[in-house]
Length: 112
Image (tube, rainbow, N blue to C red; front, side, top):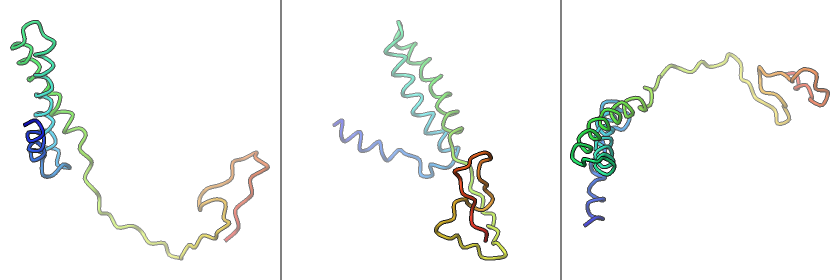
């Protein structure tokens, strides 16, 4: 029975995990469940502990779910350089980078 319940719980996952609203709802459910379990286990009065744990767990889970949503992607075009930049195999430094000052062992990049 436990395996069947665990397999059925996988269907409760939100359809779009990048949507902050659905992440908040899923976080609220998970937080309420964990809060009720911890509250009932650790409180002197288990029903009251479960009630308080479910309320605080739902609030914390919803906030955590909404905060951890990934940012929306930006579809800005990537600028294309005017000239083709083909790096050579033995170039030491990428374009725009320079050797650290005062280090005699570093070689300067090839001009090009």
